[in-house]
Length: 308
Image 1 (cartoon, helix red, strand yellow):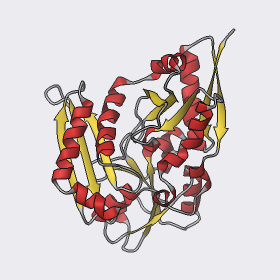
Image 2 (tube, one colour):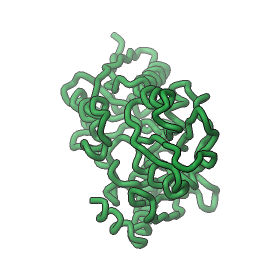
Image 3 (cartoon, helix red, strand yellow):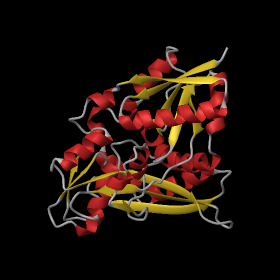
Image 4 (cartoon, one colour):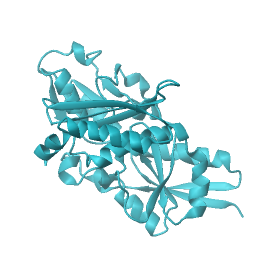
């Protein structure tokens, strides 16, 4: 009898594309495995008229999926790793982190080729306090307004003229075969991504060793190392969608193999602290701790306190 796994997933086009990608990867690696999808609508998908920070944060995108795992209706859940809380609820674990796509932010517009081209007063839509803070800092004459909904909904609002441009994740547009909508990709130096951006995480129930063993075949060690360093910074600073925080790790060279850059800002980017440090791939947590301390030493704790 063939084995059968069920993936719990949100029903947005991007979430389904990501879940179907994981399904195909698992079935390709296991000839006797059948993988099915259990589509679900989460609270984060239902409430679109308020910023995430006002309604409970990114955890709203995964709570219902975790309930499905807990109740045995699904074996694993596929998430955009940037949406996964830095501390998982008791009884759950990340069994794999898949290879990262392009982690940069995308500038999307029907009228302009880049943020630098936009005239004063132009309206830019984004769902992210992080993106709004760093881009307001760089482009103070532009107006940044909340833009919620799945990728298709955001693009429709842009096309309907509600916004002059939108900032989305490059990775999401690539996964939806919408790469042609990208007018330009914003340099990491200007907009440090959210921790885990462009990576997929697979969550399972902590004591489900059988599923964890199957899923572990998809784990990509270099991506997991980088994301561990990034998520450590966020965890130590209490990162959430209420805090403009970015963290991005990459491999540089043999002498300084792992680099981690991170920032914390207030909502309009007028107060901004940034740090960079180097470490080794075998100690990503330690590198994250170092960068978190560097940020605190520059006043990150005071920024965080002012936001709460």
